[in-house]
Every structure is written in structure tokens, then in C-alpha cells.
Amino acid sequence: MSTTAKILIGIVLFAALALLLSLSGNFADSYNSPPAARGVDVMYVVESDGPVEINYNNKTNGMDREVWPDSAHHYYDTWSKSFAPWPDGTRPYIAAQSQAAGDRRVVAKIFCDGVMVKQSESHGAYTIATAIASCH
Image (cartoon, rainbow, N blue to C red; front, top):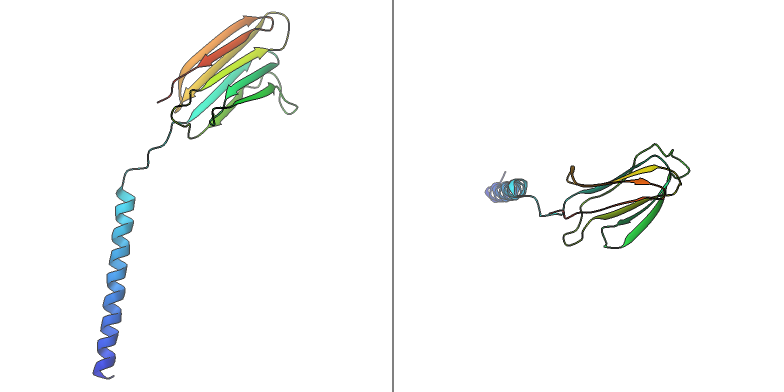
């Protein structure tokens, strides 16, 4: 092998080693850096002993509406809806209204990062449970 070929091989190997070390340093820096800031996770929960209409604030600050139970569930199932991440500046809000006469029970809950921060319970015919929270 000629001297020129040996020099070129040495240069290529040195460049490959320098690139490898550079990439491993970037990976280590990104692995050790703190996670990017993000909003909290929000979950709504509704419990009822009959059918309910549920209105809740979504993560785009709009309102959504659902009737529970739907065709795939029974009224004794717990309804829940999760949003992750919840944006800063938007307050979670939920209202659940019984859709039946008689002494009914409706419970609305708001969880922020798995911790219940607000609960509202109401009893009666066509009763409404509402909850609003501030998740930081």
C-alpha cells in the first residue's frame, strides 16, 4: 500500500471517528436535557344513576356535548374524557344534567395530572352537577 493511500485511509478514519464522537455528544446532551414544558393532563369523570347530558370545555376552549349512556354503554358505567396536554390559560369546566325524573344522583369530577381538584354532586329530578377548576 502506498504512503498516499495510508494517509488517505488515516484521514478518513479520523474524520469518521470525529463524526461519531460528535454525534454521541449531541445525543448525550439531548438525553440529559430537561423535558420541554407542557400543560397538565386533564380528565373529566361523570357518575350517574341514570342518563345524563354532559357539556364540557375542550382543550381548544370550545364546548362539546355528549349524551350518556350512548348505545354501547349502560348508565351505571362511569363516563370519562381525557385531554393531554391541557393548554395553559384554558380552564376545565364540566356540567352534567340528569335526563330523568325522580330522585337522581349526578357527580362531576375534574382531575389534573391524576389528582382530583374539583367535585360536584347533585340530587333530584333533572339535577345538574357543575365543576370548574384551575390546573397549573
